[in-house]
Amino acid sequence: MARRCLVTGGGTGIGAGIAARLAAAGHRVAVLGRRGEPLERTVAALAADGLEAVAEVGDITDERGIAVAVDRVADRLGGLDVLVNNAGAGGPNACAADGPERWDTIVRTNVDGTFFATRAALAHLPDGGRIVNISSVLGRFGVPGYTAYCASKHAVIGFTKALALELAERRITVNAICPGWVETEMAREGMELMARGMSVSYEEARRTALGAVPLGRILEPEEIGEHVAWLCSDGAAGMTGQAIVHDGGQIMW
Image 1: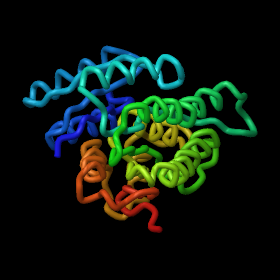
Image 2 (image 1 turned 135 degrees about the horizontal axis):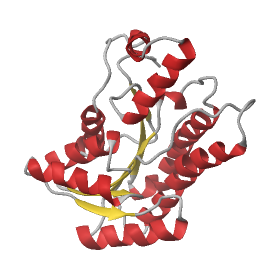
Image 3 (image 1 turned 180 degrees about the vertical axis):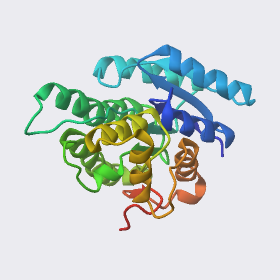
């Protein structure tokens, strides 16, 4: 069944991988983000593979602006069946050492932005629709110096569980995926920070990071996209309120 899907943060990284897998599965896809250029690159890359998507500029931290942008997406796709809340902000923010500015940016994007985008999409989602939230393995455990990111990704999981109960009567499923290391610019930045903190090369820091992954490798964005595509399938109609870790075995629970 072809669905009309909106992927926030769809211009780069995991979002671009999600858009690619949804389009390859035959769904109609819109990618949304604050900057038009990355979105257009994603659309062009899909077109080069014979796949279609549309781009829409919008800022998930702007409650009114994102509502307008989601309305435009629904008009362009002829409706909306799936929302993928992928857009997010990362980076370090140590509670004991850093001021509130970075905290505000990360929490505003990852928590408030997910809330605003979801509220906007619910004006269009039919009964039986799907919402997939991208959390993180840092939504399952803590990392020193990443208090804002850990707190916000834990919050996404709590939001997922509560919303799943709110929408159960309408058979709208709400699930979260918690990726581990994925080959993205955000992951590279994280490994570069590790390298500086350990006073080692980037390559050594990367080996150390992936040494904690039982499968011994980094995931590709399209693998997370394949997971999202399954959650949008008929076979996943009975799964809701789950936070599913997808991390090569880094944590097991």
